[in-house]
Length: 390
Ligand code: NCD
Ligand code: ZN
Image 1 (cartoon, rainbow, N blue to C red):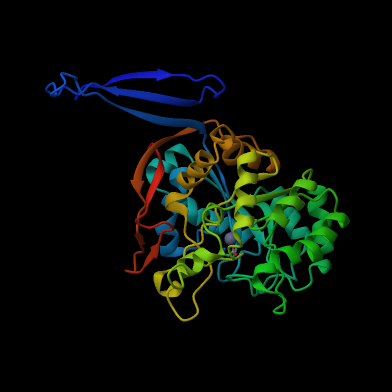
Image 2 (image 1 turned 45 degrees about the vertical axis):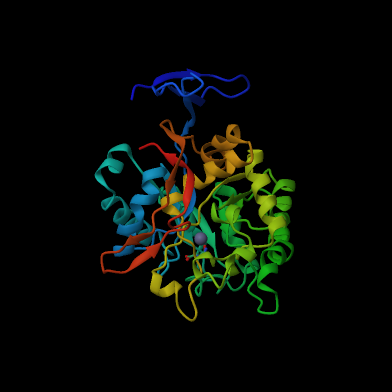
């Protein structure tokens, strides 16, 4: 069927946001009133600088091979989390890990380029000189702080954060970002309060002690986090995941317990989810994209004591687009996905672009791993509004 296509620009909408009006004249016999039937479809598309993902778990080995194409399909750069077993604690380990990632990139992505940005897993033993050397050698982009036992593979994390002052000192001098898993581990603190208490007990004092240290509060989940980052925006930023924009704590228990909606920090009350959506939709420079896509096999999720982590890589960018659309803020999307992150890290935005179209599709279900196991994608089998034009 022939379709007449006209591209129209609408006042007040930047030139990269294009509404394409498809007008289809459908030839039908005249009805009893002698009127010709006509139908039209409005299709929307946006083109933005290619985004980066500032918080990704790629794992290693066959899991890495299975999940990497999904992140590399969408993003130009990704900050790679170091919580492997054993964790990436030295520049040599990080360089080897980076090589393993680059080596198995799909050909079409390798041609376009995908850059893994490596992080150093901070422990009680980390030496400031090693962090400095790794950064100056171009291996480490940032340091990741896990309070010991706060989350998946964090047993070797930091037990005494104040005791790491010498490392923070050198990072402050270098302009090297400190990425924080912002939750206290005190078992007496309710799991839903752990981020807010971390901000009060750990982040706020650290902010005062190291005023020039670049700090990213990773995967922010509370209004408390949004407010803190906003009022310390000069050197403080937060990444916000796609899943925390979609689910609140009630959704974890919708119709029964949903292990695939369990992650850390755990999803909070609805008012917090709304605060996150407002932060994202503001386009403010202190908030940027970090999916925290965290694959675990079905077997380790659907068990008596399931792992924390939500695998969003196959649908991440599409979900963010849906949020911006729903919030009436598509014009702010590029800032959040593609500009604010590089600016905070002191990098240039990507030169290439991606285009998303508003056309519904069904999110993939399971992603197979080479050993026959699989990982379930967030939103598996559900209809999504936006898709990335390949
Ligand atoms: C992450 C993982 O599985 O590595 N899990 C998660 O729930 N987000 C670790 C982390 O970022 O906390
Ligand atoms: Zn993470």
